[in-house]
Image (cartoon, rainbow, N blue to C red; front, side):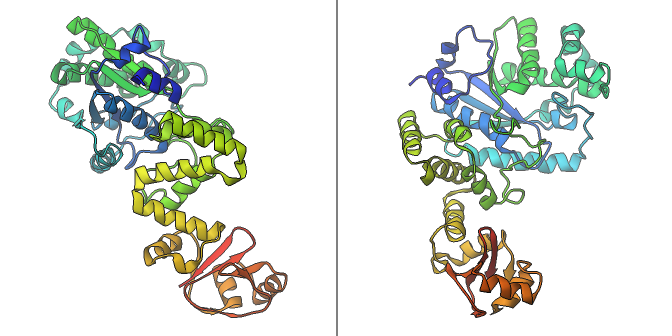
Length: 402
């Protein structure tokens, strides 16, 4: 399968300046960048990253940019209000975190990591105006949708710094063209306008051809919300911000329609395997093979095999038939991060201490009604709970006894 065919069936094709999408099959040097606006990427960033894996596997040379310079300004596209500037030490910390995530996501692949701060730190203002500003039309910049939204009636306005963001990104492309031979920028759909700035600079200043290839933004079809860090309930790649268990559960709880799209975007499974999984899921949707495969593949890619196996065990204990004796100490640590933990004692004390019951009387009523189970078995009268044990109230109330 050619790269163009691969990207098309996976749903990665949005806009491109290439005359024919088949032109993407010819290996070239490309770049993709992430601004250090946070100390982690989200699954919104992971989508184009997965697309880039296919570029790499088809012989394209990758340059991965950490936006130390652009991160000092902040991309205004899609934002209704002016961003708050990040402190320089925070940007430095975030850059290091993003670079480490590049190493994880693209493990086993060849790529260069660059920081645009390195070529902007010594450029003075007059040089930038002569080198870049003189060759960019104000008319085209003012026509950008996000600019019109910010300066139009009811808009919040826009600073000169944010207005100039696309010039900075455009110069990135020009610099990487000159220094590393980059002739393609790969980006998400929301970066189309910024990316075109670089194409225009290369054509005007170098009389050379350069192109942009963008992927659609991933959107939950049920909610219409995009997967990004500025949206509520963002799913982060950093395990300190979104635990591996919650990360796994996100994919596991995806609806069928969305999961069909996501397994193509977020996994490296080939077309035959994906089609077989979808067909099996349609025959037996209750088994949730589609969601389980999606959750397994993405969690292992981001968090590694050991953490993926651990959260699968935790999930099997909480919602399946797995016995607590089958969990290791590390597995129990994973579980302890997600549910209340109590010391051994009488079951009524455990229920009250954990907050699953408001009083000893309520705890006894829950037990008598059959609403409480201990290690998978319902109990009808108070008992002592030893460690390790899992106490469950109803379908979604849990407490770990250690």
